[in-house]
Amino acid sequence: AQSVSQHNHHVILSEAASLELGCNYSYGGTVNLFWYVQYPGQHLQLLLKYFSGDPLVKGIKGFEAEFIKSKFSFNLRKPSVQWSDTAEYFCAVSNSGTYKYIFGTGTRLKVLA
Amino acid sequence: GAVVSQHPSRVICKSGTSVKIECRSLDFQATTMFWYRQFPKQSLMLMATSNEGSKATYEQGVEKDKFLINHASLTLSTLTVTSAHPEDSSFYICSARTVGGEKLLFGSGTQLSVL
Image (cartoon, rainbow over all chains, first blue to last red; front, side, top):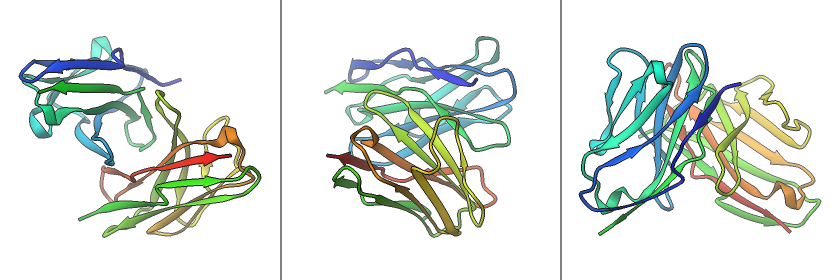
């Protein structure tokens, strides 16, 4: 069965620190990969997605993620976080061609001003 | 712009009553909507896929008679939790796929508390 694992449940960083959130998935076929963010009191929003092509994907707000097929990973990165990046981040996987998403457990990021 | 509107955002009900949650696509038509459930500190769990004009497809372990889904139009899907019990207390989120697009938009969620 498909599964998504996010290793860090809580992360606390100071402003300007670099961020990397881990995401590993378990699935043998072709997948689409996503990172969503949920700011306090708001909807889930798409940060970035990978369907095919360049495995280094750039998203909104300076976020990027790298798909490493051999490691079944899709880690999220940002070189310098801001206080406004405080949110919960979810990694998700879907079968290519479908829209059934499997979500990770989420990582709560707190950025200290 | 395209938005998914979910109501109510919070509902408290007595055990044994039924609760209906609405999910509307605004400014777009959604042939497919999805319903998720999220327990505290856990992942969003897909409950069912709702296709306009046809029966919903439920994930394994989800009781279709307890969680009734209706997708009668291209802009509205409803989830009814029937005969709710305290163990049904959870956060429910809907999402909708834009027609012809690859984008999933999420509603703001409904916190259900069953007393």
